[in-house]
Image (cartoon, rainbow, N blue to C red; front, top):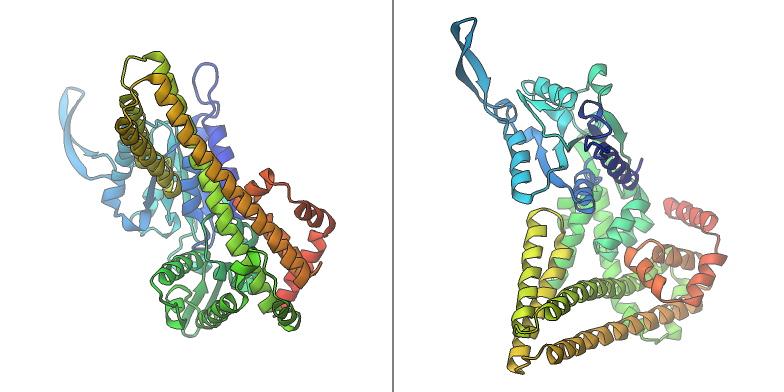
Length: 502
């Protein structure tokens, strides 16, 4: 299955394992809660989905790469304990608590989350001395003599043998005690993630043209040559930062991430073309409603790769706007929730200075941010959202003090006005996104009509989470028209076949 389906399967497994009956006991007893084993190529996203699952399900997460551990750190160190049996004292070997088990208890203490996921990566690449302990762990949920706390689900991950010569095959006895999920790379599913993570548009555009290079491993006389989804994502981040630094990623830089010389060279050449198209086609003008005849004439004669690159440039600019709007909406919702709390506090006690009350709400927002970050319940995007809201509230506290708003009703009306200004700004931003989308459709119809480019344009709008969210609120007639009229299953398959021939 693809990584998206695997993620949903693990979430469903967690829900099933953690379901309790009327007596407060787990419906599926611990002995029947099989550890989940993810097997898939490197860089496909096995580790990342565990972080996402923990956040979305409100679970604790402890993650270990087991190849970094010795038998002593995983199982514990031996020590001598004196015990009496049958009236005689004996020296008995005991073991300290495993570092891994102790980390689970530490996580429970630090976050207050009594249920969670213990994730063990590269489990089938352990050393020979540690292999028996790993089999015991999968079969009995123990490291040494210490069990994993009840309520903690075990998920392990590993690579197939063709990707790692250190892989050890599990025996039938062990396999019969696990829930095995085999993960395959899937470009279409990865693109959904890529749009959400702001993967550089040049990477997305290139993989549209060369989908066969999304995830590839070859064994040659010179060793392994490979590209992985993780390599594309990390290279994307570097390209984005390089652009801020006014630098360019060349073939040598690409080769540091795409460890397949032919792919690295091909992508570096494409990246140069992408920057060229970016300068020549002036997508910003198109989204403002400027459609130049010479541009459309050039595209009529251009090769398919160039036409597709222009479509992706349009989508990238639109997606930037949709993403910013999405984040602003989420920030507005958080701000509204904080202000409702401020209003409740004002209504409960109107004899307290309003600025003090608002400062308390701002402080609570910051404490919530820290707790969610430390508990692993928020990602960087959400953390920044909390930071911005806390900073905005704090700035309003200072303005409120400066204006000497000491009466509850006056302070609330002033605060409400500040929020409405934010709301108006959001509505203006949404209107700007709507105009940009309409101008994009104007250009697409003029330059490409109902061709393959329009199919890809609509398909991409249906893929990006931020564009989907925007189209739920904004009724774009042409989007619905093309979405309904174009036969995506057939036409997209034709496009993909054409791309694979390139």
